[in-house]
Image (tube, rainbow, N blue to C red; front, side, top):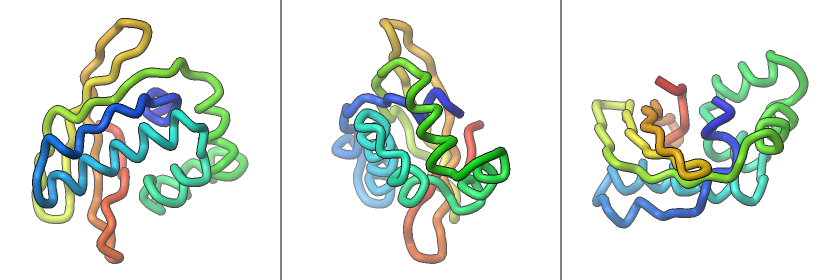
Length: 124
């Protein structure tokens, strides 16, 4: 989980999608932006699903402190959304992360919350 929480680059992917897929891609763009600028509080309060934030808190400390530690321990890299698949209230997002010239494909799981926002639910 620390890989995506820390130092994500600010490459924008939302413009490559439309409708609800663009909304989901924007969440990943925001994660990248908040990670790059070490905004742990915004990641906890605006990106992570409440259940994920609670699990981080249960792991020790506050969500902000756990995320802040992760942000300080990972090299800066870029996230690019390659695919968004929405099924009901969940979205699977395939992203390419680049760190120190090395590319990695990851799948992120987002959930559509009751307040209408998409939040990062888990890392598949």
